[in-house]
Amino acid sequence: MRGLRCILLIIAAMLVICTGVSAESAPGKIPPVRKEASGGQIIVVEAARGSSFKGTLSLREKLNGEWKTTLSGIPVVLGKNGIGKLREGDGKTPTGTFPIGHAFGTAAKPAGLKLTYALAGKQDYWVDDAASADYNKWVHYAGNPASRWKSFERLYIPQYKYAVVIRYNDNPIVKGKGSAIFMHIWRSQDKPTAGCVAMSEGNLLKLMGKLDPKQSPVITITRRQ
Image (cartoon, rainbow, N blue to C red; front, side, top):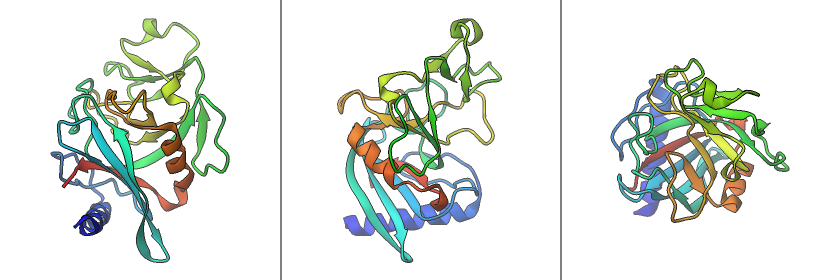
C-alpha cells in the first residue's frame, strides 16, 4: 500500500504541474501548481494529521525515465497549528505544490550545492508586514527595522544556518496570505514552526545536496493518506 501511495502522489503532482493554475485547497488534496514548476524532482511532505505539526518528508526523482524514491522517512516539524495556511500569522504550513526557490544561510555555501545560494547577514530581513510594499520579500536594510516595518523576520538566526525558499505566495504576492515559508533547521523534533518545514541539519543538507534547479524541483505538502 505504501508503494501505491507513493506512485499516486507522484502521478497527482505531475497532473497538477500540467494544469498551469495556482491554487490552495484543504489538507489531503494536491491543488494545481504554477506552470513554471515542472520536471524531475518532487519533495513530498506528509503531515500526520491536518492539525499536527509533525510529519515526514521524502524525495522522488525521475531517473532514466522512471520515478524513484531517493530519500524517505525524514522527520519534519510544521506549523504549530498544522497545515492548510489561509492567512498571515495563522501558525499553519501551506498545503499545495510549490516551486523550490534559492537556498540561503548564515554559513558558507555547502560544498557541491547546485541551488543558487545567498549569505544572510545581520542586516537581512524577510518582511511579513502586510501593509508594506516589501511584503514577502528579502530586504537588506542598515537602519532600525522596527521603524520601517510593523513585522519582520530576522534571517541571521541559528535556524537559518541553512535554508531553502519555498515559493509560496510570490507570483503574484497577495497581501496577508502568508510569507517567509522555508525549509530550515529545526529547534528540535518537538518544537513546531510558525509555518515553515523544518528538519535536522544533517537531513536538510542531505536534501539540499540532491536538489538541482535544472530539474525544476517542487514541493508538495499534504496530509498523510
